Length: 272
Image (cartoon, rainbow, N blue to C red; front, side, top):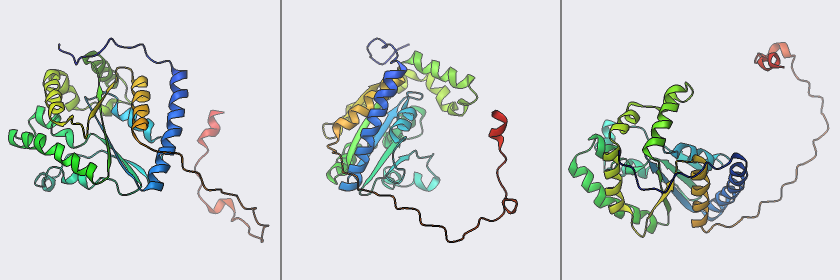
């Protein structure tokens, strides 16, 4: 079976250095967030790649300590019948950030160049129109002042299948395995060709693709976050000085009797 070109699979990054560096990078992400808020910047980060390539895990680590009012995830469902009649990019435009916001697209308008193309969910005319319009669309975003970053998570066929089997056998992860995921195993080369064609048309100087080797999820997360931080000219914004006031003396307030309220049972007591 054909594989995407890659170097030999690296040894998994050990947990302790991974967690130490991840925390340091997440601290920088908080600084980035505050810079975006203070400067009124608009940041869009696109996460694309094969099923089970590690996009969701990377997004989770990026947003873990960020303010959800500033940084939000856009993971759009299947378009409605009405949306199918709109200009293709229209429903994505609705989710673009306003000043002081960050939007992370968990899959994006590139669905048309990947899943829709391979599975036959769009016509040839719609597909080629997308490849023609997409660079123009992204240049419009950039010219409007939006910071656009695009990441492709690249996973090998053997590692993808291993992750699928892990999902199948783990009841906590089984919901992640969809019929579309299963179909992608037999259409590996079709997806490879679609990805290559997509890069030919949309890997442009104004809006380049950045490939993340993701057979090792820990390395992928570290590498992707470090790269993102290196591409944004953020700086630390001084935090306002906050001083907690003294609690005032009691003015006679008495709490109502406990039996007037319904309390959650102390399930934790049985664990001691």
